[in-house]
Image (cartoon, rainbow, N blue to C red):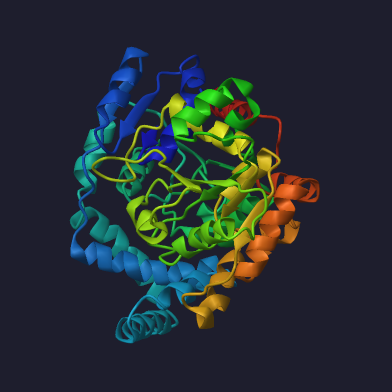
Length: 458
């Protein structure tokens, strides 16, 4: 069971999946970074733990993989919305860089229409995997583990890439449960053919068939999302007063709470404007009832960029999520972290985020969901931001009607007022998001994954 970043901990360890596997087999956890508190915890629970040797990939191999990415996006993914994000992000790059990138992509794609080019590409990849990476040494390392099955939730992750290829070469049974509903269309080529695939919903099921036609001969099971099981278990809810102290909310005095879940700077550099607009609207009385805004920072973002825009405010409480100290992606997600998140979703009244999975998380708790879809910093590029909501993985959310899009600052304020005063119409629609994206709302998705693993282990 490889764990290559924080969210895998939540899925494999905190759901209790690993503990259930221990009843049937001897699991080996392979970490891609040294998280000593997690290592100690796992070992104390009788789990064998190893640190994966870093993958080493030479420049020739990396350049070849870029060409394979062009092939994958153009000939396999074939998603009509793949370029929505590419077009959106181009506005933050220079014309020179955008032009060079565009020419390089077109050149590589045109070359692939030449006879036997793709066949040669993959033949070369097999050779360079042996000669320009440390595949051989990792394969030897894998052999010493004496494992017969590999189970991963991140088959697309670059740090697991060579490990999983080595497991394949050693003839292991290969099982994957795709970590998130956007991974199939948003991540790159998955080089290993798995014996079993587990996914969140019917859309993921069809995406696998379209992008990887060989999966029509494989087992694909819709299990829902185990990491959402926490939301259906009341033991993960803190006492409200304890939660208020934890996130730093004081003197609430019946004020309602707007949760703003921020996105990463790498994707949404202009996003702090929306938090500023909400703060200003509370100050001038446009948002009724004098609510508080609880801002939850994204795990791979920093609070300071938001504080720099908002400045001093009596309306905004800043809260951080799990974040690694050396690398933002590497943190041990604890049960306490999960309880804090569950309580935050439960005890806030209206949820706002920008094209985020948090829309689904909040919908489980029957909260109105609002998404900004305008840009006052770059108004002539607002259509590109709106396009982000219409990416293939996110379209079912928008079409469900459970997410209300605000096309201007005024619409954002109006929607917040409506949701605070009369949340019921929003709540009814939000449940469609849950049905569309995680399929099951019974808190038993971990058991569904475990049922698949039991069958395969047997």
